[in-house]
Length: 429
Image (cartoon, rainbow, N blue to C red; front, side):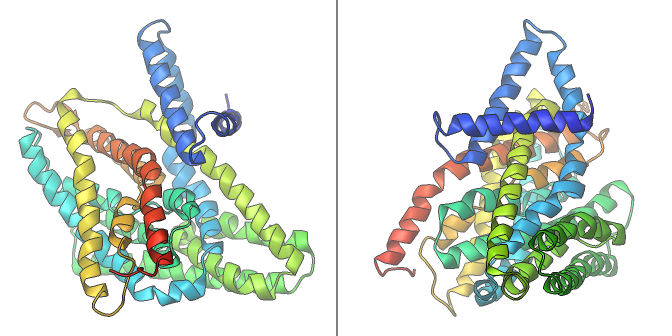
């Protein structure tokens, strides 16, 4: 079966789960799709071990034909981040620029170091010592919050604007920082490269700063072309060129396509929307990208649930898998709480800000895609009983599922309390 046919059937499966969810579970759609796909994965594993030998292997081969990492990182990521950028309110983003910048840069750094240090210690507790460089690798891939998961789940719950813009802005920008850190540690761990301040700075400048500049130029060019036509269909087609050809060009140039899409989306959503589109075209723009965003999110979260079939489980590593969830939550809490001790000296915030930013810092497909890119063959433990790639993939998958299903389903009361506190006139801590 071709990749196209596989995606067609998977898309139909995702939409079917979403349809059934309206009448049975009635929970947030992306959570329902992930849960449904996870249940399907478990069912196939049970059938493969009992009455239908070979089912698991066949399902794994089908999922592998899609290549989850490439499908996300080099494909639909551009569409999802561009759609997220279109919905960002630039004046509100500017009002929180320092908070977002600090959370993006220092927050990721704090979380990475906490997670890496904790995993290094836990490795000895579980009798599976892990070299610190690999602990750093895991810290860099799991610390950035996933913008797709955050926008798909948290944004739709209507958190107070101050909290909402912080968590949206942070998630949209910190994946670029996290990816640069991951690539740097990856090169040191597997390619034998030496990590120097100069090499890290060069890579960061080329990837992150280059992506922002390229995104600004792309958004400006698209703005000029859209402003030069009154054809509504042509205007929408031009926006499609950004996450397709624009995203591909960013990858060819070696700059961050993720950051480029966010910047281009913010420009078109906050400038071109009001000066280049007619009132009717503005409605078409919102409806078109909302529908495309919903469709691709449904497909992505289905693949996250089915990714369980790709995980090789080792019973020796279960203690690390179980402890990785509270470890990452602790790293997230410190990465938010420490900057907030400084924030509160100059500005007042909702008293639930730290709790919502901690519990709403969801992980998703981006972390899984990075974990899947780690090469197999590095053995851990005294007898080499656990493969590094399998261990990191197990921990990442456990954290992603906990993040989407548990955190995603339980954050609503917290957000409702924040909104109630703001309405009651007690918005600050």
